[in-house]
Image (cartoon, rainbow, N blue to C red; front, side, top):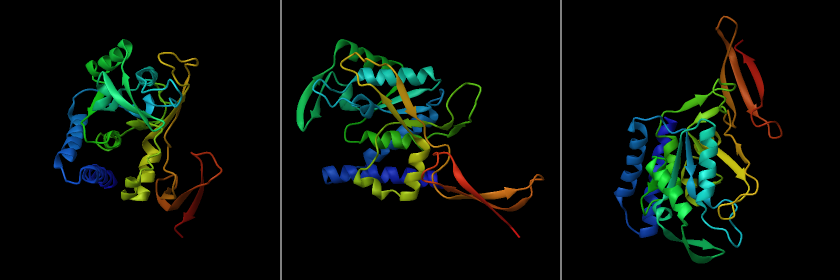
Length: 266
């Protein structure tokens, strides 16, 4: 099915990226990714409902002189989602879990050293099981993408009693547009459908060090429905099929609205 097709596509991307970078194949990189998926399914605790693209959040709006990889921004998003009833997992490359690491700003490399408070945030994420460390040699994007098709999907309906926002779980929290040329290897329609159903964007004021002037955060939820032409049986009051109902997305309408045309069987 489409889920397995997408999963195979991500495994292929993971393998081809390693081969492209190192000019050799290494089955271990796909085995590690599959191991991650197995861990998500069999960990025996409440399933994660929000998978966070850690670097994308930490670097968000940090393109100023004092900007850096900011652990306080990760904590800010984690706290906000947990207050909304979500179970959170942050995905980070191994290098960002070190006490110091190299970052690139304006095409210039610089070494960043974590402060005492930043190390406390990192250590707390690790000790509470909210951080997954991506092995060296693998791209972290493939891990949070793979997470979406490795767990049982859950749909949260509108106006639910818990007050959670509706949509598919797990949600993937990232502003990454995934325009890397390798994404073209995935089947385009399948990729668009996956992206619209799982990706949740965020916005907030950038932290300067540990401080943020406006501690408001906004999330743009994934689409309730796929943004493509779809058809389903049209039923009468007795549940009998009387035709087909076609749904068409309209460019200048609300994202969760569409044109509905019912075509009778005869």
